[in-house]
Length: 67
Image (cartoon, rainbow, N blue to C red; front, side, top):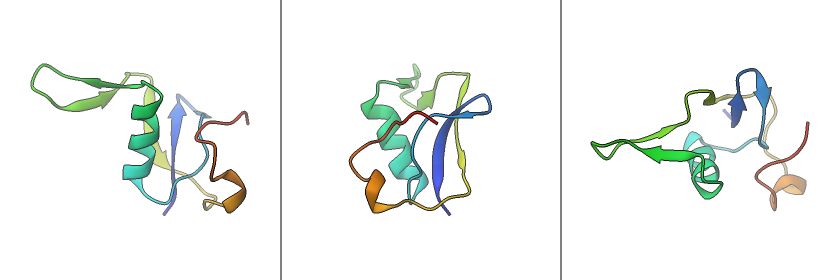
C-alpha cells in the first residue's frame, strides 16, 4: 500500500512504496522532530497516511510536488 505525507487533508508528497520511505522523506525535509525521550514525530498538523496511487518511476527524483 503506498503512503504519502498530508497536511490536514492536503497531500504534500508523491506516493512512497512504504511508510518508512515516507518518514525518511519527511525527515530529509526537516519535518520530523525528536521528543525529549528520543522518539520521532511529525508536526501536529502533519500525517503520513495511505494514499490511492502507486509510486511511479517519473516521480522517483522528487519527494514533494504541487498537487
